[in-house]
Length: 279
Image (cartoon, rainbow, N blue to C red; front, side, top):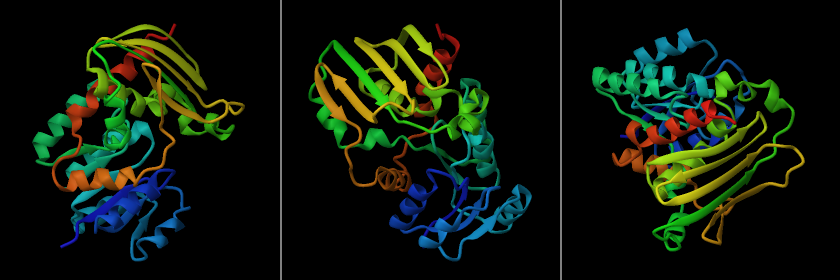
């Protein structure tokens, strides 16, 4: 029998999740988003129910039990929406970041125990074929530079993404999957050497294990898009297209081999310290 899903948040990343649900044989039965530009759902699931009001969605989930609640809402709502999913008896699949602050991690772990469900985080870069190629050039001590420029228009500043209390700032909103990949490759112990972070760009020098990392992020409109990892002089382009990594993530989750709360925790902690150590 196919797994049943509901999704909270039908914004930018929503279609990747719908495709992953469809390609892994699932059924999307409900979505909730206060904005009603959700017509893309017809491409995949024409019978999916749509809710603008949280209360009606809550009632629907209680009356129609589902296997998974997928959280694609704004960053500051991820943690409470994960709790919602557990409360209605579902396991949860959550986009990055799982939470904005480390203190929320304890609450999520306690909720897993209370409700008996599981929270999975989408950390798709860990599944990229690039990883094996990266590991081939890693040495006992490494020098890494990350240049990640992904231009955004003025809308970004006026949306929740431009509000640091809602997005967590550029390292949390744009850079967390890069930081997670660095911690995955080079170890969980880190030390921030220097950071200079603003609303539209940020730089940090970090020691991760025996690796010196310089990471440059920018959403400035005049920057050419670049997504480059340079490890010991060898470049890896994160813009390379592979088989959909969200679908691979769902397949792992369905087999019980996804990335749980503890796996997501180190990058959330690093983002939080970067936010507080600016300058």
